[in-house]
Length: 182
Image 1 (cartoon, rainbow, N blue to C red):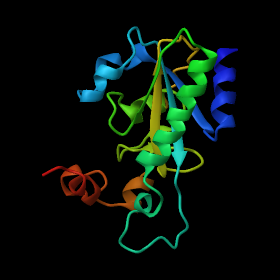
Image 2 (image 1 turned 180 degrees about the horizontal axis):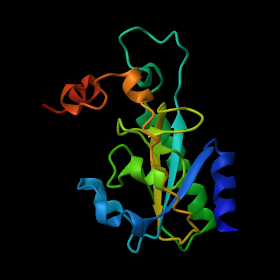
Image 3 (image 1 turned 60 degrees about the vertical axis):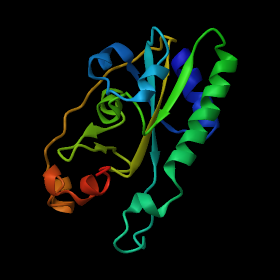
Image 4 (image 1 turned 90 degrees about the horizontal axis):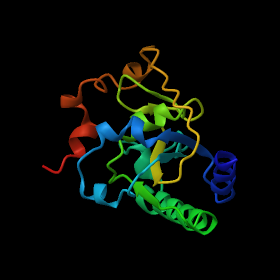
């Protein structure tokens, strides 16, 4: 009941692509960042959400498609913040903390574990409906929610390498290089 109720709540505020992952299945792989201190004590479940951003093929040339849409930190952060507010009202005895980009959660692995897609050879989440054109965000809670934990392996079809020949070579990947602080 809780899983479908939460899916319905998130759907009512526009979050349609939702999966659930047991916190225990990723806790040994948490990323070190300041946001780690915001994790609820006794975290039980990660509610992971995929936000599609596929834009028309007429996106500006030489500009990544994700840069052609409103800043996802704002859009995803607001959606997840609103979701936490509604969830806290319904489940007042439990904590709900959202993360968007700056997260201790290994997002791609968690999303694959929750059944939202597969982790491609390029390291990105590949979803059935949107390919890799999604932003990820999550809500971590101490509320125990049924999780299927159905990690699917990449089929290694080569489609990501065909689209971006250096996608598998992180040292030469322009997206990877342009996001480094140095």
